[in-house]
Image (tube, rainbow, N blue to C red; front, side, top):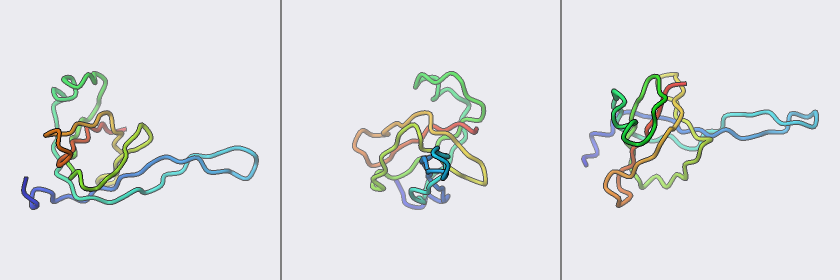
Length: 106
């Protein structure tokens, strides 16, 4: 794992409910962190190995585990003005050093 492999800045967001002032809630995007990543386009085979069969534009973002981000179903990635939903998370070497975010546009 070389530091120069992480050459693309991505932004990780979450959806949070915010009171709308009329007794209800509206959903807003809140930035969690900007991190450096390695971006790989995928043909979907890794997604299918992970059990994900419904995808449009699969992309894999590899980030360092030292970022200490707790991911859940509300998180998403913004990259090049597009929104990528996180469909799966895979620890590459099971030591928490490098994490693959299996994302799909939409």
